[in-house]
Image (tube, rainbow, N blue to C red; front, side, top):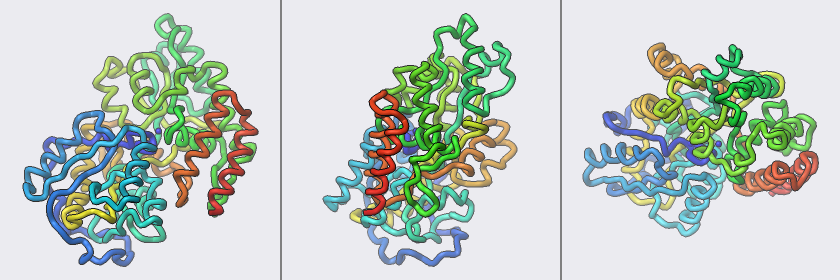
Length: 434
């Protein structure tokens, strides 16, 4: 888990397990939130087998953590149900299960922007906040798990967009520091591509296929140009000069081949593989890429930086994966214990070390030993704390579909940026008025 996730992976696919201690199954530890219990403990009854539902495990590691739980809880085993890698398909299948009131899904790995929609439709249960150490987590991350002041999910991971770049090529081209603006990035690419070994490389890519990743990348471009999709009151505000500058950056980048034409089909994994294969100088993606790139041919030849923007550092979309409990599930007492185990600080530390998974716990970003081992952590913390949430609306599925349709039309030349934003403003006004 851009899903993971929102970008399709939404990070849940990167979870690892070997060596993880089962220290999170008790009920100790307060939330530090000061809020009243949103759900009666008595409502979480039943022990026995449950399911964990998440995007496809592209790393082959999620089953290991489930295996450790199952070994310690032979009568309360967890079955891993893997959904497609893209967030839109995951959301659709989870909704279909909820609409039939099926008990097939128990614990759901949800995108941080689904909380309002799932909670408003009563597809997920309000949770007892005092069962989870929310007070130790980054506040913007905890807020993604709430709806109308109640806790409906538990942060398993956070996510902030990062700019991955080829340090070896920039250094050889005489570029001494990563770009903080789009113009600087394009200028750096021009210098790098003069190198014989880089003449066939493309400059930049993100995720531009018509799916949630496109919503994320569009939101980042708009926010990084000083615009917004909705204002503080939730009203659409996308038909503005600032938003147009953001969309124009993407449209113009496709036109002048700063972004390769094939990137119109990119999801997270496509961009990661292109970067690791030496096809890209810069890549906008989630931090999970770091650990995988370290195992590739470009190990030691890349680094990360904050996303660039129009006039200075840009703004990431806030991503991540939360765990929610299906309202129609059986064995909810087991589910609650498994959720605490899966979202513990011990788990987050291990996921960080083995899968570059952005932890929700604040103190892990200020650990000197971890910062030395994972030098991208300060940039990642900045990305998360300064990230801008995608619209928190009950009709999120319709909102993101409208964004994807209009932005894709602009990127493929079917509409001008101005017309796409005007049409999107009208679409969002209708959807948010419902």
